[in-house]
Length: 333
Ligand SMILES: NC(=O)c1ccc[n+]([C@@H]2O[C@H](COP(=O)([O-])OP(=O)(O)OC[C@H]3O[C@@H](n4cnc5c(N)ncnc54)[C@H](OP(=O)(O)O)[C@@H]3O)[C@@H](O)[C@H]2O)c1
Image 1: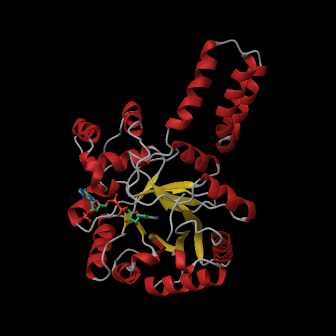
Image 2 (image 1 turned 180 degrees about the vertical axis):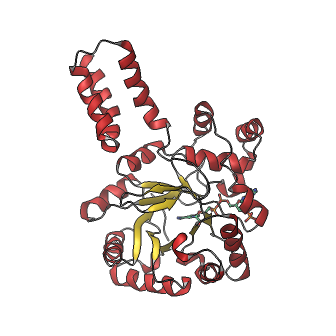
Image 3 (image 1 turned 60 degrees about the horizontal axis):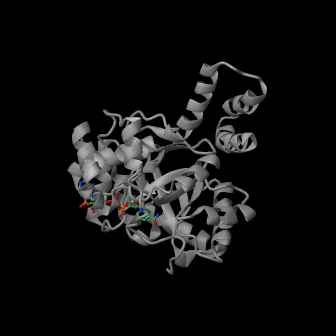
């Protein structure tokens, strides 16, 4: 009984120790100090529980950032451009976002719109160095040499000489370790400020750790109230891998969820604003997509309210493991 209490106690404190050695050390020694004051134990237990609840993010405004493991500052709110057409549509969408104060744009080679993203960034008054630009190597290009080539091709289309973040788009079996080696090379060469993965589940991350010299700084995954994957979120936090949400609005399905409608009314915000704020309060970077100016602007208007801890948990409890996109454990493209 006592030993199982201490086992579960240490399981709880381990993540705290990894993130904050000072707090973790305090909890490690507490059982041996003969501490009897209930308020000290309450404080300790409160911190243990709050550790999982409280975002590590200091949420300020649209330009606010989170520190990646290597110290690079990643804006925690950005614009996604999946399914946004190349040409005028993507140029407009990125322009609305940059003009509204967004400083983070997420594209991918497979979206076929890197050229338009590049044009919008080049034409905008915002300095390139103030924009956090992400793209991803597509599955067909995985492997060492082909990834290096794909990187050059993306840079040319984006009309830039560096990336802020380059991601392995999907964990293609038998390929992703070599792809990762290429990303490590690009990072060592200073051509990309941070490297990461997308759609990697815990077992795929652990497999990558076997050969990786650099631990991915980001994992971009499907994340929304119907797909929380809390153990994966915890695992990423423990390893200082920033969790980033794709399809945060469930590609529109979020708007039909009754609890989200109820809470949006309570906070006098839209469902999109509620869900995107919830992402940040969960410590998750978010990149909603819209091609409409008014939505681009309103989606980012989430810095004037705070969701109570209880309501954050009610939203998280909607989780039912439901995906709007493919399952990274079982995909064939
Ligand atoms: N790594 C990956 O494998 C992966 C996979 C999917 C997505 N992503 C990234 O994540 C980004 C976001 O995900 P997503 O594009 O799949 O879906 P999403 O952001 O969850 O939803 C986008 C959809 O919601 C609509 N929408 C946006 N704001 C709205 C609002 N305020 N009110 C009503 N409707 C609204 C958009 O329509 P309108 O455009 O017409 O406004 C669009 O149909 C992508 O763009 C991409 O950058 C990555």
